[in-house]
Every structure is written in structure tokens, then in C-alpha cells.
Length: 355
Ligand SMILES: [Zn+2]
Figure (cartoon, rainbow, N blue to C red):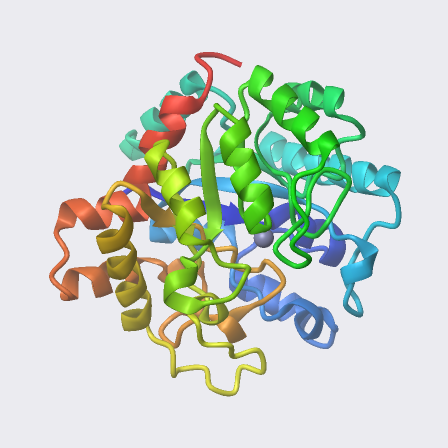
């Protein structure tokens, strides 16, 4: 079992709310009793102990920064480009601290790093405790200017999703503006360095312009197909075809709102089930092909347990998706591909040989 989760905003929650994901979910929840953390960002669902238990071996771990225009009460946001830059560096420090302190956590910046994590997970003495982190910058605003992309590469970032909301580089799915000229320059620099481009949160026109311009690897780490659930945040047919025809992957979010069942108050928790997730996966497989779909949970990405399908309490339960797929008659081989194999093959292919 080697599951891959293509989207977790670990360091944002660590910086904004003091969450230390080396703790178990239970411990974090206990520490947050009588605080307002869960009111702001939802009940915690992530912890490395639970990830280890469930078989997750690789995470695309984000440097996510929130523009102040979209700040909800209690969230940490930036007020300037310099503020975004400083917050992304602070998040990078958090990952560095975790990796330094835990011999079972590893940055994955190259094929050889990935091979090492795979090897360690195969060592029975280490009990599959090793987890690799591929750094993903979500929202490119912390990059002071396109030329600075290289420095972020040297700091270990391998994937950039230029959009979250509108910024200096691109429009987003919120406002619909397209890729800007500074964004074109950023893509050109990213391509020279070897970054993977994540189209999540881009407007249709920005995503189409990026597909036309970028000849490096392109993915969507956390979304769903618009044709199944609607909404501009989800990905259009045209953009999905561009991503998949280039060998890219769509990471599906197993969260109620991304399955087309808005449930923000959590009152209808239980109405969306593991079967709903399996349905979504199988629909995507039929539409995109079995090699083009994977997991991108985004859990703890501004929402918590309240937004998870009924059978899921934490990331420790992520294997319930595999069980639901098998119950539906999906072949073992496809289940493994969806839960990790597809992302693993993709990332193995696109990483440089050594850092
Ligand atoms: Zn996101």
C-alpha cells in the first residue's frame, strides 16, 4: 500500500493555528477544545500518525497564502506581496523543522529522493512510517518576481499552482480574469526550472492560456470535473482534456462540497457517503481514463470533519475509499492506481534525477 495525497495545506494550518501535524488527530482535537480554531477552520482531520496508519507514503504539501480580501474572521492573511513572501518562507521553515526532527519525514525533490522513500517503506523494520513531502506552492503571490521562481526551486518547491484568487500573475476561478503578462513570464521561468504546473483555482481562460503556453508537466491537484458537479471552481471539459492528453492527472477531493453537495453547516453530515466518493471516482475513470485520476484531499484546507462524507472521521479512514471502490467491483489494480499509483508514476517521471 502506497497512497498518495496530492494536496494538504499542512504548513498554513501550522502557521495560522499552531497545528503540529506530528501529533495525532485526537491530540490536536483535544488541544483545540475551548479554543476557536475549529470554529474558524473546522475540526482537525489530519495527523502524520493517522496517515501512517492508513498507508499514505507521499503528500504534496503546500505553501499556501491567503490574500486579505478573502480573509474570514480568525484566518491568517497577507496584506502585501512582501507579506505573502514572508509567510511562505515561514511555512517552509515549519516543514524544515518537521523533517529535521522526524527521521521518518523526507522532502522529495528528485527521483533519487523518491526512490529512497520507496525503499524505506519497503524496509519491514521501519513499519511503513516513512512519508515523503513534495512541496507545492498554492498561489504564486509569494514569488516576488518571475526570476525568483528559481530560488523557490532551490528551496525544494517542485509544483506551483499560480492561482488561488486573483493575483499579479493570473486571474482565478473566482473572478474569471485570464493569465497576465507577468504570469506568462512566470510560466516561462517555471518551465526552465522544471516545475510542475497546477491549474487548480485558475479561471478557464487562464488555464487554457497556460495549457497553450506551458510545455512542462501540468496537473490539477484538487478539484472535480465541472460536468459532474457544476461550478467554476471545478474543471471544464476543455481544460481537463488538455491536462489528460499531456499525461497529467486530476486529484479528486473527497469532500462534500466538491462532490456537489454543499454542506457547510455540517448538518447533513452523513448524507454524503463513501459510496458517493466511489461514484465520483468511477465517473471520472470512465470520463478521463484509469490512469488520469488520483486523490487530492485538501482536507484541513479551510474545512474540517464537518465537510467529510459520513464514514470518514480523519485521514486514518482514507482507505474506506478503496474499500468502497472494491465493493463496487473495481479491480485491485485500478484501486491502487487511484489511491497512489497514478500520482507516483507521474511524479517519478517528472522529478529531476537529483536535487
Ligand atoms: Zn486550493
